[in-house]
Length: 117
Image 1 (cartoon, one colour):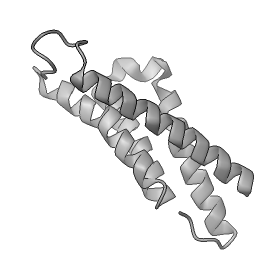
Image 2 (tube, one colour):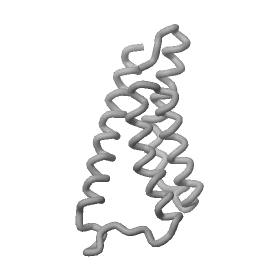
Image 3 (cartoon, rainbow, N blue to C red):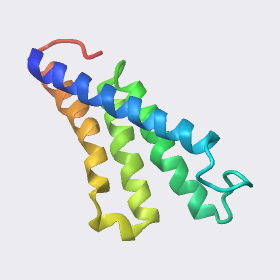
Image 4 (cartoon, rainbow, N blue to C red):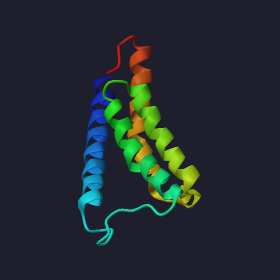
């Protein structure tokens, strides 16, 4: 279905662009004070790797392999929530929408006999 593929690509691209923009701003900006970005605890570093780093990688991979990329997006958000259960009741779940769309698109494409990508 062309509409599903188009919506998936648009939502995924906008999400990816936003996350990359925010990651770059966070890494080079002054939001973390004069000593820049430091992780004082391992769970903080792991949470940062889960979101946004693995989410960005998953969204980028989803253009070639919707199952792998979409699964990585869902896994990264799941990992973040496992590390930070306080986020369970926050709108962090909205970041799973592009991953779910990529998985649904890949499933539908395989069902119809098309190659995903």
